[in-house]
Structure formats: structure tokens, C-alpha cells
Image (cartoon, rainbow, N blue to C red; front, top):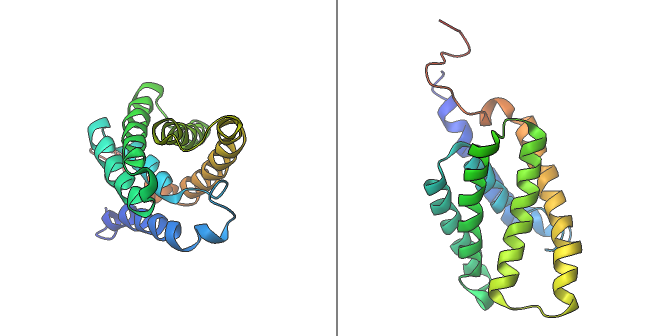
Length: 171
């Protein structure tokens, strides 16, 4: 392993966070634009244990809640639960296939939006149906497409390291 290899994963995570605050506003409304922060969390959960994933989700949720003070705490709860659940689901379903990871990104986005709607109580009546049946699936789809693209494009950088592997050379 080269010395620069250990920096690749944090660089991708930093780029996703920067894209959240720079590019996301130009990709359509908040309802359909991919959520790069959630994507960074879900990519992290592919490699991490459920407890660490929940802690990372809590931090990302607090960061999101700091930007939307109307329903403070809803994002922290939602991201914590999604981080824990996606890490646990990854362990159960052996998410090594790109399609399974895309489904994980889609389901994580939809579940996060559902929890925020349920906890914050902002929407009522038919607005909830529109959010859960139209806007959340669209955002889940765009997030999943971007996530699968990132995983494919940076597959060598984001693949989990196996213990004992020496640069692809088997002993």
C-alpha cells in the first residue's frame, strides 16, 4: 500500500460534503437534488460498524439541523437511525453488489425523509402523501444514481481493505 492510499477515502468524503454546500443548490430543488451528506454517511456505513455509523449519523444530523432550526433534532434522530440501520443491513445482506448498494442508498434516503416527516410534524394531509410517494422516491433515486456513480468511478479508492492483502499480491 502506498502512503497516499490512506488519504483517498477521506478525500472522497470531503468532496461529497463540499458538493452538498456548493453544487446541490444548482441541481434542482431540495426535494429532488441528491443529498451528498447522506450519501457520505451511507458510503461510510458500508465500511463501518453499526455503533460508529450511528455516531456519524448523529453528527451529520446535527450539522443538517443547524441549517434548519425549525425542526431541530429531527435530522439528528433520522440520520442516527439510518446510519445504524444501513450498517446493520449491510452486514446482514452482504452489500457487495453495486445494485444492492444503490438500493441501500435509495432506501436510506426514503427512510430518512420518512423519519424527519414523522418526527417534525411539519406536513399534514395530502402533503405527506406527496412527500413520501413522489418527492422522497425522486430524491432517493437521484441520490442512489450519484452514489452508484461515485462507487463505480472511485471503486479502487472506496473498496474495503481486506486484512493481510498486500497491494493485490497474494502470498
